[in-house]
Length: 114
Image (cartoon, rainbow, N blue to C red; front, side, top):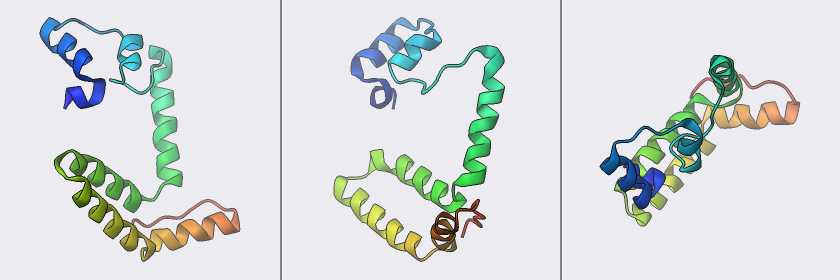
């Protein structure tokens, strides 16, 4: 999986050398998304998680995670079929209706995960 994340050259370098990588380099190669000072990490992490909990459908997160984990093992056709089926199911979900309602009513969402 590492070559898919950081590219072949970076993966070979990391695996063959077993060297330590500092945070800025890890971010530059795509191994991590963000870098924080140690004293800011917990606050930033909690803020990110709070935003997900408050504003993202648990159902949508589960579907997205499943699709992302499945994708490397699927053909493009299989992935497209799965994505289309999930989209159709999403349109029928309670969370989709709540997503539209909260946007139109300009209020915080109250997702159920269904």
